[in-house]
Length: 137
Image (cartoon, rainbow, N blue to C red; front, top):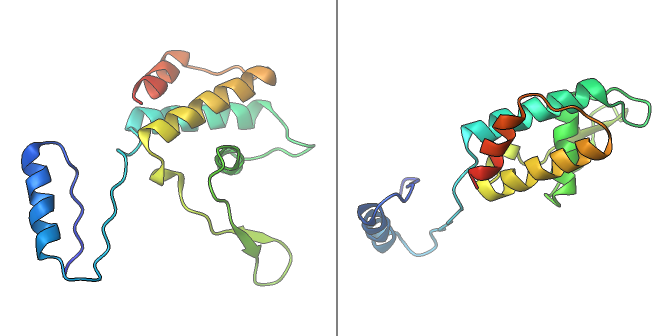
């Protein structure tokens, strides 16, 4: 059996899922997920991460937007997993990507970043887009 991904947008899509499930052999796995984050939410997240990275040193270090993303994913209680690197001089993040966040989870992350930035005097640019990011939930 092949792998199927169906985004349910209509009753016809639901019926297609039922047909696929009916034909699936025993032992098949089925996964239903909430709608993924939106492109405007993703754009807003990266803009905010960049603003934070440019304006806020963290414990004496300048972090990259990617580093800040991991910090906020951890704050959302998303599973962050690290393992020692090959030569034993540091760690490697082997966690899931933020691309798996649902619209709601991304909205929560944007709100968390905004609240954190406000407490640390970060000036966010293009705040009108922030409203789009949370409104898309």
